[in-house]
Length: 70
Image (cartoon, rainbow, N blue to C red):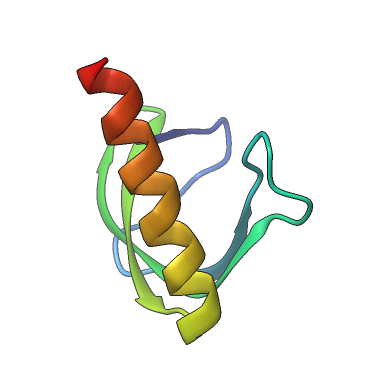
């Protein structure tokens, strides 16, 4: 979920960067599409991600799940 003061519409596409503590560079998502909007929040689906960025993203998710389980 992303919060914004800017207007967002379902179906809009954009490139995004995700800054993660511990990584030297932000993850680069080549294309994300807005899937739902509710008030000032919206959800996205990653539709284009380079393989190396996808691998980093998967590792971040594994690490987050491990932290939650601890």
